[in-house]
Length: 609
Image (tube, rainbow, N blue to C red; front, side):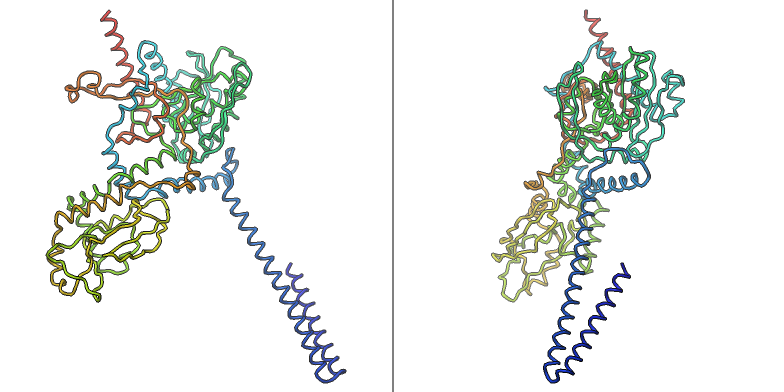
């Protein structure tokens, strides 16, 4: 390429030199002005030709750059993978993309103040919502058959815990299995390739497929690959396709389930041919439960003997849309423990929670805490002092309005503003150091009226949590004359009760207003994902609800089992124990309490007879 450019430049120089010399010769022969005119014409023609060639080269370079940009944008918009990565290069690229997605959906949207103070305040304001799972739409389950089913589920849960937490030999010893009972063992997890095992359980005549949850970093990256991908389920009855259910599912879990299916289907088909009376049960907890449910959907579509598979999911992640989740009621059983948040946790439900947190008056509550807490008050006064004395620290584009700057003057200090008087705002200690009430990016224009004069502020690209559309401050006199300088120390000593109420109302107006999504953003909203199958929820209720309200303080919590409707899990219900009650030991403890309670109820019924 370089040699061609050099040859072209040399050829152009030779042509230009030839034209110049020929022009001079012609000029000498013709003489006079005619030769000079011809020489100028030839030179201008050569220059224009060179300029045209340079312009074409620039256009070609610009077209190449545009093509590269389009290719780069197409790469960024590429689809999420449909299979597990083969090499470390694909795994690293997918991990980086997963981290970007996780950041964008968590800290990229949630402000620090909402995480540190808003969720805690909203949780305290919301209270215990366990009673919602025991409403009129739910069905109470009890009796000897339910107790026997719970005993069987408890055994599977303990085996799942031993496979996830203990060495593999300990798991085999607890389950009473030998090495001959192991069909597949994949103990080392990779990205989108979770750990799983298949064992033959002689006592229940089942082939048990256990899938481990998010224990290692690679498994957590699999759980964090939460993009929604198209997923369909073909309903097969009596060897014929009876229905096709379309929807979306969790990308990481779909890819992991397909990888396990590729490994497990040949092995299970061969084992069922040898033991045709055996069934296939797929068991998992948390992320492993979500993968187990999707894997069961895949196996049920097969025409082999594995089509009769069933799934037991303990605390599964929300992993598929409504229609898909409803279509699995016949072969998926989901068990949820008390306040476990994972079956309700998803991108769409987190967005709803953020709107509710922003709508609450947590900033007003935080201001009270700052005023009442000595340490927070000291920090706030220190930051306010620095902002008032160091010019570059104070940012005029601050997202938080200084409420003490917007207080009205006392009647005694009222004076007529003159034309020469400039508006002077005195900085006071305020909630300026907690400037973390960020909200979704949105274009808003704020207009401030000061004594009938409208002052247009600059257009904000990031609105605050309370969409300040316009504030009319006609009644607030922010101007101070020269005679008022001597009284500033008296007015800065304390706020009156009226000023304090107005400041509090302003903070509430900045936080209570709910943002209304536009039509353009609503079209891009994520799909609401649900836990699939039939949902059995172990609900902890105060004993007073079954006895009398006067005994509520003295009675302990009573556990009951309900079959709950799916729509209850489209909302995140905050609780202090919502994370702790997701772990398997808590599930085991609640199930043991429930089994004991059902045994007591059966004994009471027998005694009454």
